Length: 116
Image (tube, rainbow, N blue to C red; front, side):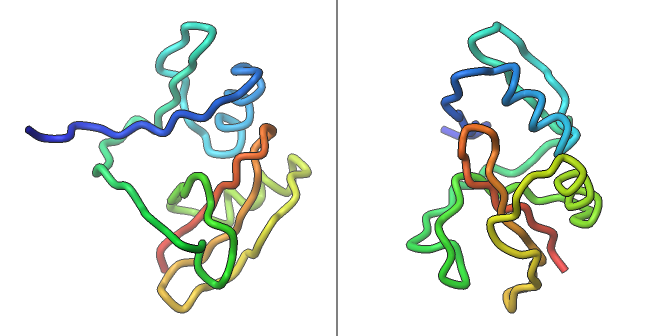
């Protein structure tokens, strides 16, 4: 048996609002839309991972999602342009990532990071 994929499912009251957030901030593409569920993708293959954490690092709250990007400053510009409040950072962490936390419209805590 091989795990082929792990999908993060976020409970939201408004799939259109949530979809707009993730497409605008992270440039994700809508790849499936059944109305009650929308699936977004970056279009590239990722490895399967589950992180188990007692804290979020640097004594922060454990984020609901971690989204690794190739250009943190570009995402930060989108976040600032959209008036989204930073919950933490941006900060360069001693374990080799630069990151910040934001929340989506439903309150999901997102760790946005780039390896340095």
